[in-house]
Image (cartoon, rainbow, N blue to C red; front, side, top):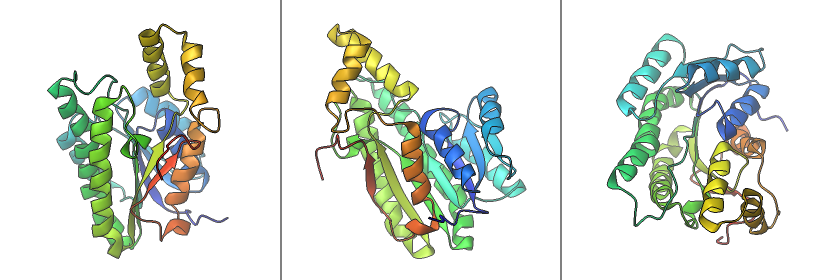
Length: 260
C-alpha cells in the first residue's frame, strides 16, 4: 500500500528511544522528512544518524517541563525552516503509584509535560497544516483512557485529560483536512515498561521475570508489543490513507483492554 507520505514533514516528540524513535524511523522509511525533538542532544544526534539519509532530517533540543520555551523553540524552527504536516505527541509517563498518595505537584508536572506541551505544539504547527489542507496530529497516550491501570494513578488521570482534549480538537480541526487521533499502547518493550516491571517486582516480592510473565499472561497475545508495532499504527494514521479516521482512540495492546 502506498501511504503517500513522500515529501511530508513530521515533528516527532520523545524520539530518541522507544515508541518515539521507532516512529521516527518508520516515517523516515516512508519518505517523510523528520524533525526529532527531545531534551538530550547527544541522543538526538545518535538517532539522527540512524535515519535514512534520502531526506534532510533534523532535530530540536527542548525540555517538556517548560511549555513556553518549547513553543518558542519550535516557532523559531518553523520560521527558519518549514512547518509540519505531521505531529506525533509522545512524552514519557509519570512515575507510578496509587492516586491517593500522589503529591499535588506530581499532577501539575504531568499536566504540564503532557497536556500543556501537546497544546502549545498544536497551536504552533496547525497554521501550516491549514495552509496545506493536510494535517495529522497523533497523540501517544495509554490504554488507561479506556480502562485505568492499577498503580498508575497520576498517569490514568492525565491521560484521560489528554484524550478528551484530543477528541475536542478533532471536532474543531476536521473541516481543515486535519485529523487528530490517539494511539493507546499496551505493555510495550520500552524503558518505561522495564521500570513498571521493576516496581511490580519490588512490590510483590516476585522476580522481575515472574512479574513480566504475569503481565504477559493478561494479554491474549501472551507477549509484549514491540515499539515498531506501535510505530506502524502511527505511520498509517499519519498517511493519506487514513484521511477519514478522526477522533479515535486506537488500542495497540494485543487485546488486553477489556472494554470495547
